[in-house]
Length: 422
Image (cartoon, rainbow, N blue to C red; front, top):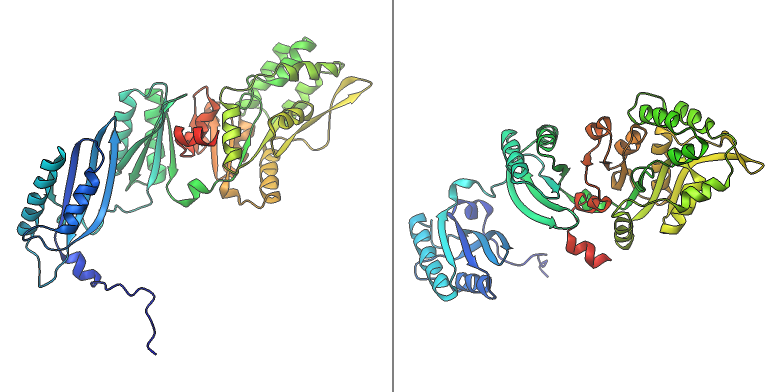
């Protein structure tokens, strides 16, 4: 018995198909049910003098009730080469019939000189513009910068209109480093946030997120609140600022700051914890990612007496932080166990990822200070959130919005998808 081919459908040789003329049909007008069906139905039936066609590419979008539909067709040679003029003429007649029946406009033009698939070299990227609002100058600046590094905008879609407006541009033909550098200048000049991510499966394969706590998951710095109760606020603020800007070793600065808390009653920790204020959008971010199957946790240079109860209240999967030493109901000014510093945060991320069987390139880290940099760089996607300049410059993406759930748009989730997951 002869072997049955896995794909018995007859195929024309690839070079034969590629050699035929191509055309681009652009349909525009008020959107209504049946327009796309009418167009492709007409193509299936054919028209006088029109050869069989192959659908090469289709893109359709509806913007505020207005339809834009683009279709690339290739003529299939049957009894010999197809004359392009005859091919375009046949499509024009067919398009006129569709336009008359549906009330839309159908334009036909040659696409034969655009290559087999119109693809540009290099990996495509997603460029996300975020702001409240997004000014036209930010879009114009981004488009100019993209063109300036040899890129092309293949598609634009809106991801969200609340709490921030976010637009996603799919860009081809530009190198990642040049694209990020050019767009960073646009972000600085326009005030909009602009993130760049390589397109592909890895973008939607993220499965674990770690969040810094102070000034990321919660507003303010816990150590500052404790220092205020110890009467050492100004001293601690100076040390904290130097550490966050990378001017002072974090472990050294942490010991110095904790030393100022010597003698503070342990009950003060409960008072500070009860007055913690979550960053707007924090619950939405965590709840949405949890329902999408993410493992969520916190890694903090702060204190476990604060972060462990916080993690429990939010239903997080893991938490890592420093532990304050307590004796006779008061803080000793010392620490217990391994210090979670800049390197320690990266180790904690790697440990949590390994425990859950998740590769590092499928993780996300969010933070604001220099002690977060190793963690941000180790993650598959490191996001600087309202961060110091040194952090924004080195992170994969930077957000300066006040809403933590804007991270969802950087991950490519639309507002509708977020609402569906809530």
